[in-house]
Structures are given as structure tokens and as C-alpha cells.
Amino acid sequence: MRALTIGRYQPFHKGHMNVIWEISDVVDEIVIGIGSAQISHELDNPFTAGERVAMIRRTLELNGFKGMSYIIPIEDIQRNSIWTSHLESMTPPFDIVYSNNPLVVRLCKEEGYEVRHPPLFKRDEYSGTEIRRRMIEDERWTHLVPEGTLEVIDEVDGVQRLKDIVREEDSYGRKAEL
Ligand code: ATP
Ligand code: MG
Image (cartoon, rainbow, N blue to C red; front, side, top):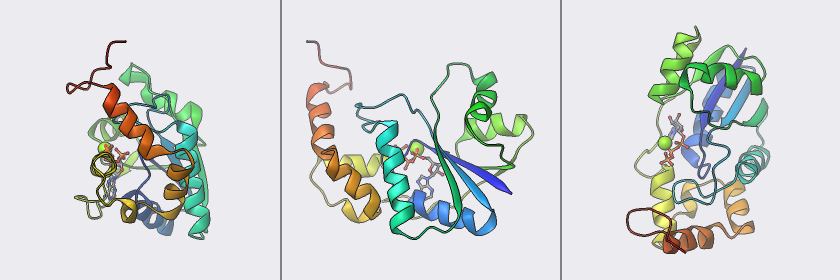
């Protein structure tokens, strides 16, 4: 049996990692979809699809992940009614979807997929938004992400990128005028 799970992974954190480990106890193969793949260098989406692939790949490897996995970037399309077809066109066939995102859940259910809700681990800390906030405000965040993610963020100077983005956007989150 093959399962799909999807997130933006900005960045890939220990909550995401726990979910993947739990799913892989239950299914034979796991498809990890990287959502909003086309977006990067923004406050809520600082990392490229390729960087996110690297975070996940290295984490799986460094932690001795035994299962079979496919890591697949999925770009957004502005037409929800055909989003599942778009998704299916990018992934190996899957039987089950693990998601807590209401829109993903609805669209996949309408398409006839069984949808399961993965448990949330320490959601107050294991949260992309919280980790990005801590990076910007120089608070402790490295314990919230797995080693593989940490390596990639260091490699691409991710914290500095995020701080630069904050500086370049005004308090309303709009791009500063040049
Ligand atoms: P952001 O704050 O940027 O939205 P996020 O932490 O919500 O980041 P996403 O990249 O949006 O993570 O991925 C969403 C998916 O990850 C959802 O399916 C959600 O259930 C799962 N997820 C997010 N945080 C956790 C967590 N702490 N434990 C388990 N699963 C989580
Ligand atoms: Mg989210």
C-alpha cells in the first residue's frame, strides 16, 4: 500500500518527521508531496523546492529511514476542482492520503480517496510559522528541526535569507518598492 502526505515544509521540522515515521509503520511506500513548490524567497515560504527536497532526503538518510519514499515537488494550480488530477499527474499512484489541511482533505475525499488525519506533535513548537519567527528574532530554534534540515539551512544561509526578506518587506508583508 502506498500513502501520500503533503506539506509546504518551510522548513521540514520534527513534527513532519514524526508523521512520516508513523505513516511508514503502517504502509509500504510513502509519497511526500512538497506543496507550493514554485514559491520561495518569501516570508512564509523562504526555501526553494530543491532545498526542501534536500532537507527531507538528508533527514531520511541520517535517521536511517528504512521505508521506500518518493519526494515530489507539487506546484500550486489556481483551480481547485482539478487539483487532484494535477497531483496524480506528478506522483506514483497512491491509495491513502494523510492530511489535516481542510482543502486537501475535501478534494481528496471528493475524488474517492481514503483520508486519514496524522496526529500533531508538540504543535506549539513544531510549527513552520513558529520556527521562522524564532529564526528572525534570534531565538532558539535548531532543536525543532532534524539534523538534515539544519545542514541544508546552514548550507544556503537560510536564516540570513529570512532576515533579509523581513527587512525588504514592510510591516504589511508587502514587497518594498524599489
Ligand atoms: P506553516 O506554519 O508554515 O504552515 P506547518 O508547521 O503548518 O508550517 P506545513 O508545511 O504547513 O507545516 O505542513 C502541513 C502539514 O504538516 C499538515 O498535514 C500538518 O498536519 C503537518 N504538521 C504540521 N505541524 C505538525 C506537527 N507539529 N506534528 C505533526 N504534523 C504536523
Ligand atoms: Mg501549515
